[in-house]
Image (tube, rainbow, N blue to C red; front, side, top):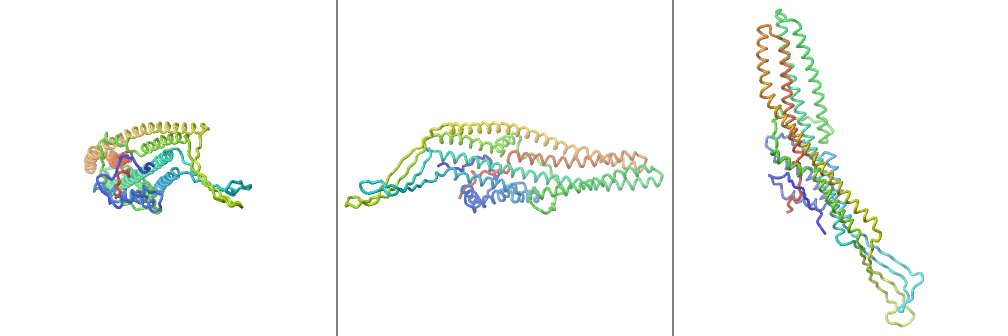
Length: 465
């Protein structure tokens, strides 16, 4: 019988690092013996906890420790992810169901009117029959079920990769919120300084009261904006708590600075890996393989089935002296079940063929969609990268120079106070836009990692010791 634990997922996220042979051995055994509760639990533990842990260990030393911790907690605790893995384990249970011979049939018969024979009357009959499908039928059934189980595993991987992206995206949003709050409060303090400056000039009749009112209007607007940002942060913290399955609100220690990340691989390689390793595509590959096996199953189901059996006949004794008197009889039987009515077998084969065509069309559609999404992600990455450079090196620097000049002029002469406030608002806008651009760039990088399946697991490369 063929092996149903062969995997063909092409990517191993553990490259560059070695995990302990004991853990890998246990994981491999759990995948190959999914019907024992203890090994299933070990498989779940290793997939959801240890493998993400080993993968994170290969990241750069500058990676945020708490973000890694949240990613691991999400892998361990997220209920949707657990459900997907349990669905995979449940699908594995289908393999022994379809690869087992049908139950033997036992029959007992009692002769109400016994049949007389030379050695005595036949009184009862006990028979046992075992049917056998056509050669290779059980293997084809097992292949179809195993490929569907692998498709379920790819669904698990897709859910896990998407979960990791959501955690990272939420984390980056929290950083953006924190920086927005910090920048807004700094600008409130600066506007307080402007208010004091305008008040001093008003008291010395060097400026009108309207300057004080203008700065107070801007200040109150920023105070309201800061309060909204605080509320938004609480909602994001709750979202993060949901992803890692913590009922209580977290107190994330978001870093003060966040470096803009670059793409992990050259663009052509990223595109190639996306088309090779994306779990949505590999899932369809396994579904297509299952459909091909189902076509083979339908063909073999339409072939004859064989049966072997034996009957034991209980014989009573005659009231005469006779050689073999009362000797029981044993009958060996060979039977064949002829698939005479072909309609259902043709329909079964046609169903599998249509299913294969549907999967192949979904493969094309999914591949096209992934290519479009990949190009859109690249567009977002390059746009964010340009904005990071623009705001950090050009706009913010020039605005600050202009603001310093205008502030100095206002303290010594009747410079345009409205222009001073406009520049201050512009600086605030550029500061917030710079942090947003950094977050957008890192989010785009995280999404490319999701697309090409950075954290995919390839059990084929796990060595059993």
